[in-house]
Amino acid sequence: MTDFDKLSEYAAAFVKPENSMLRQMEKKAKQIYIPIMHPSAIAFLQQLIKWKKARRILELGTAIGYSAIRMCLAAGQDAEIITIEREKEMIREAERNIKEQGLTAWIHIVEGDATEDLPAVRDAVPFDLILIDAAKAQYEKLFLKYARYLAPAGIIVTDNVFFHGLVCDIDGVKKKPLHRLVGKVDSYNRFLAERSEFDTIFLTVGDGLAVSTKK
Ligand SMILES: C[S@@+](CC[C@H](N)C(=O)[O-])C[C@H]1O[C@@H](n2cnc3c(N)ncnc32)[C@H](O)[C@@H]1O
Image 1 (cartoon, rainbow, N blue to C red):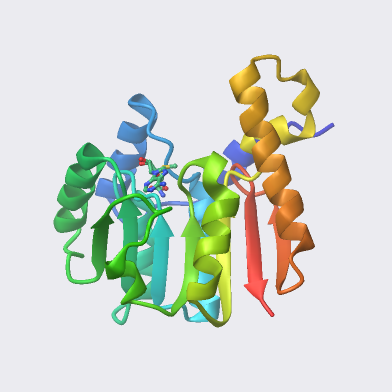
Image 2 (image 1 turned 45 degrees about the vertical axis):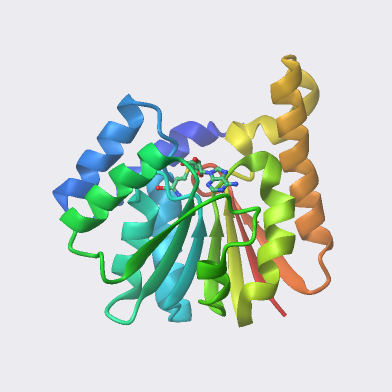
């Protein structure tokens, strides 16, 4: 069988971030184990934003602001990115990075738990695109909560739906907490496939992307 990780790294080598600071962010994230989006996945997402002319974007899970910055650059001058993060330290780092990129006018970080009611998010609806990239165990809950915040024909993109390939071999995952988590991601994928109000496609890009379009 094809070595998917190898192929993924091969493909990633062709995609370049817009500037050297983003390259530095990629390197730093790798060094200190911050799970930012895979270069191929973010490159695909940028194309999707351009195809759909998505301008109002909601992200669940800011981390250090990497994907928010790259989505903002793809969306252009009329972009409005709202991104939710619950970790204060991440928020501080994301704020620094966003400021350095000169994008503070376009990217708004909302501090809080994405599973809770956040008025700053509610006030900004509807969104053309929502990126779910927060805690994997909460994906289904987050999808159900935020699907109603989508504009007509809006898109929900979920990252890491293949969980490093573990979804194909759940029984082989011996550690109980990890086994439970992989099971949750697998259930989420099945949940997405069953949604009659959305068309979902699962893409072998990065760590797996689910792209769900509202019918
Ligand atoms: C995978 S990282 C996000 C990476 C980021 N989207 C990128 O590619 O640059 C997940 C982030 O989501 C945050 N997070 C997880 N669950 C959350 C929740 N329920 N509410 C807010 N933030 C959450 C974590 O603190 C972490 O920083």
